[in-house]
View (cartoon, rainbow, N blue to C red):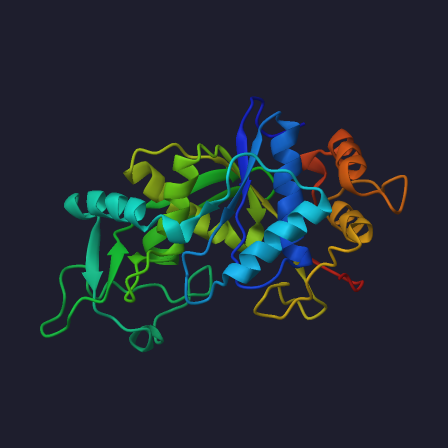
Length: 303
């Protein structure tokens, strides 16, 4: 059964910093099947807000690969790099409310801070009460408060004490670009996304996003964080670890592997692909079959 019992809207939001690899395909498949199982819409959004690392040729390649694998999405693809004015509008709302403040700290100055749950330094609040004398503001940070709890449909109940575990997060970077946490909250609200199915590598961002949603009086989606695919050394398959792109010329074996990764039974035919694969997958999809793990090691070579 789907974890929402009404017609809803899900999304797949890749970052075009490389070609589509197996880990991203798993996230696409899980979000697609859950949205369609709800009788809902499924959107694709290019999260290229980090423009220095994103490439349009990768975005185009990701879309072609999704099409080759048989994915069908609703509406036009949203592109974050075209939405700066919208992010600025919401940022000004936060600034006027005093929810954000300028920070003059450099990355090197934060290296001594304790690491948070996501591995990044917990911001020690150096500029929270005002910029130190002679120090210009570089980035803008969100003032976080208290503890946020939510029920994740795969990983179970999650709690995070924001000041202690992550600290005030950057919403507007020193280079003038809006940060991921800002963009994803605004985009999900504007696209009416009410359930988010994504990799467990993003679960530690969820509490901050819920905090920001509440601050802006925006609805909070339901969340389900799928296990991430890791290699034999425990490293997440990603563009940074040079994960091999999936082979769009032969979707069947990769779809079969992704289905098995998400707890579906083996398809009746090894070469099942396209519309036939998705019809079979929807008939067998259940979120409670997904392994309740943060990560799963890939033992076989998948390309």
